[in-house]
Image (cartoon, rainbow, N blue to C red; front, side, top):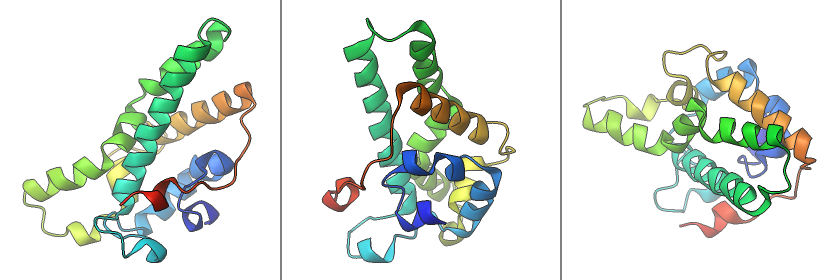
Length: 159
C-alpha cells in the first residue's frame, strides 16, 4: 500500500485508498507499536504516535482555515469543516497513541500485537466511522481544490 510506504506524509494524495474498507483491513497487519524501518532510530517512534500527530496537525490546519477564511468560505464548506472537526473518527485518530497507553494501564498483555486497524476501528464496522470520515475529508479536499503535495519533513523533524 503506497500510503503506508510513504508513511502517510501526504494522506490527501491517498484519500481514495485510505478511506476504504480494504485499507482498514490492511491496517490489521500493521502493528501499532512498530515504527517504519527508516525511523527506527527515533526514540518513541510508533505508528500510533505518527497517526496522532498527523490528526492533531490536520485539526490545527482546519481550525486555521476556518479562522482565516470564514468570511469568504461558503456555508457548506464551513459546515463540512465543522463536521470533520467534530467527527468521532477524528477523535479516534487524535487519541490513537493515548489509547495504546490506556490499554497498557488496563493490563493488556499483548500490546506488541495490537494493530492500527484494531486501534482505529475497535468493535465498530468500517462503515460506522472510518469510511464516512474519509468520505467527508475527500469531499472537502475536492471542494477546496486541495492537490497532493510532495512529502514534507514533518515526521522526520520530530524526535
